[in-house]
Image 1: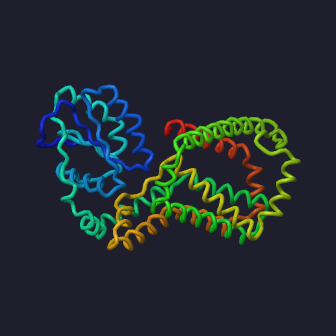
Image 2 (image 1 turned 90 degrees about the vertical axis):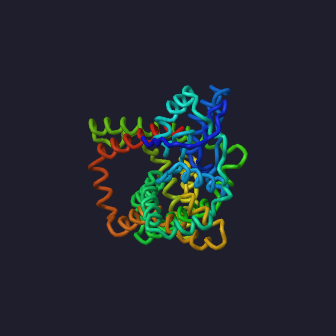
Image 3 (image 1 turned 90 degrees about the horizontal axis):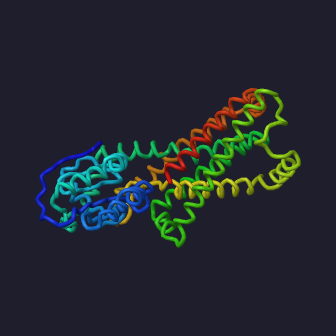
Length: 371
């Protein structure tokens, strides 16, 4: 829990003014508003005044910096909540303690924070220039990029594609091509999102409906795969017969798929398929989880004298983001022996099915909790 009490001079108001700062393209930021703050403001309309600010804009970011200075905030986060004499930093702290803290301040008739500091007094360009020159900023970008790079959706798809090629006994050179095409597409798509593509997507009509359909569709698919995986593990452990496994394609369909793959997943077809897959997976990941870019880096790309530095940081951040994908691809290229892989898969069928069931169960639970 990150809570700080301070002495802030503010004019008393009838309502408790609660100021929330978050990104408009961050899933957790939007969840704080949707799940916690807006319902609370509707529940106490005469006692709480909710003010929300978008840190993806220069005005919102400058205002946040000013309030952080006045409140003595030393460590920023993607979500920040300000009350008259205290504040909460970060998603976990706000979701865990925000409601109780707001109600306690409301009942104690705390002074409102109706007066906004002058955001214009903040030299945003100077601040960004000074901040981006520090080791702390570089190390923060390094840590965030590596942490965000552990992306279950993208990594799982990469492993699936490589395994798919392995079952088709494709050449290692083709594994390299599909890995580079897929990873490059993920990189470029996220880079474009950092430059504004994601904001365009999220402002499209029907975006909320589409994102919910995708989320619950993915949940249903994960739940079904999990159930079939556990069923197959039990059946195979008892009989040892692959013919009794449910989670596989009918033989006739397999034959047709092999023909299609042989005809279309060679040369340019392989590259195009990898690019399309990488783009769709990246788009799905962004819609479902709301990947957030560092506000400071994105803000730097909007100002002429800092644009080159911002683009370099954005490129560096995205390289860290796809680094795990590159590692998976390199390991596959240098380490996979198709015949050995097939034998090991057959030998460890029960373990693999149980692991797949657990992964799909975890994914289904995550999609429910994240919704």
